[in-house]
Length: 144
Image (cartoon, rainbow, N blue to C red; front, side, top):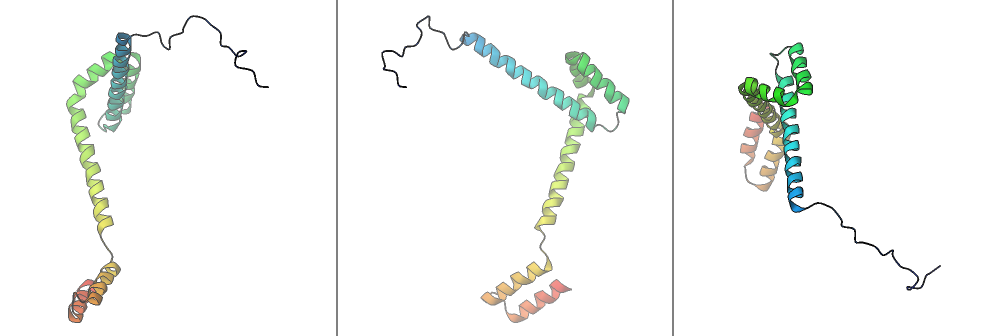
């Protein structure tokens, strides 16, 4: 059923604003969200460092986590002061190990098999870039 335009009307009343917040409150909210994200980032960094450290015992790690839950701001501050230089050393060591693993993986994947090399040599011989004698020499060297 289609209503004529004059019978369809919206309720009249005071205009409702989309949000009851001014610019200062919006900026303060953005700042609070920023500090909350930084706080979560710091906690994740501390927990990552804590469980990366192989010198700290399980009980020590449990105590740090317990204090991070019960007294988070003070514990995080103490952790950063007491173990800050160790955090840097462990992070540098972990990054160096990751780079070493990545470099070895790249070297492993970049190596070609003797069959690939023979195929390339054959293509060069077919194009006339190398002579038959050079091909045989390179083939013998490759298969040796």
